[in-house]
Length: 286
Image 1 (cartoon, one colour):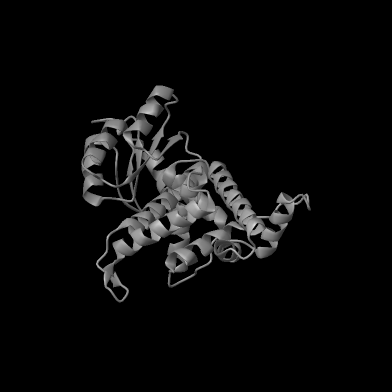
Image 2 (cartoon, rainbow, N blue to C red):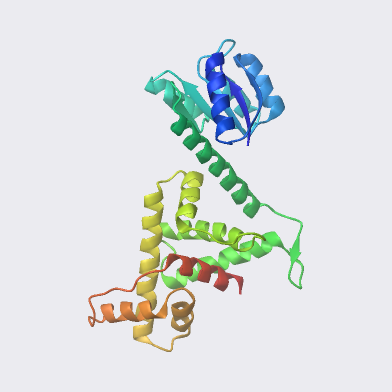
């Protein structure tokens, strides 16, 4: 990533610069110690990340960031300050900073924060790519990709409806995770991924706790498994049961869930979140 440092304390600038270089976090394209000049520098260089002091000559960091946000600058801002005033920190976040770091600078904190910002920017780029209307055409009828994406979204919603989870809070998170998985599976390079990493990315993008997202997703899929198991109990040869029990779940676990519902076992079926999401994408693509 490309960095700009706006800090009037030369020693702090040097420490920050050394950390960025030592841990290979990116390239410093410019730095200065004045708020007004800093505004022009960030606007000119359009860095990925700007590390900005709160108290600066010319104008303070909050005012600097507010003006740049109004100008549509897409730089991520990390504020560095000695101030522990909660109203001031709140005002900084309301202005649009990504993180607030207290002085004196802690190496572990600043490296961790910068990596989180990098991950957040990468995720925003991915989500933007997913939602963009592109010029490519797919299929024999030359439908635009946007129409194809809308059709896929509608198919996923229909599947959620048939599984009885369309109103579950976790259904939206499952759809969001499915978009991230689809990007990875369609890539030309490494197609492996860890669910934990996806939860982290989604957490940053939608500003919700990782554990909350994971619990919602697991709860929604567990309910879907229960509903599919009930389909099988009612009619073992039901078309929807045959399709969903194999595509979205391990059939052995569906059998365990059926046995539990019927009171034949005290063990519920276990959900496989990866299989569910990849199966969902497979069914939506058909």
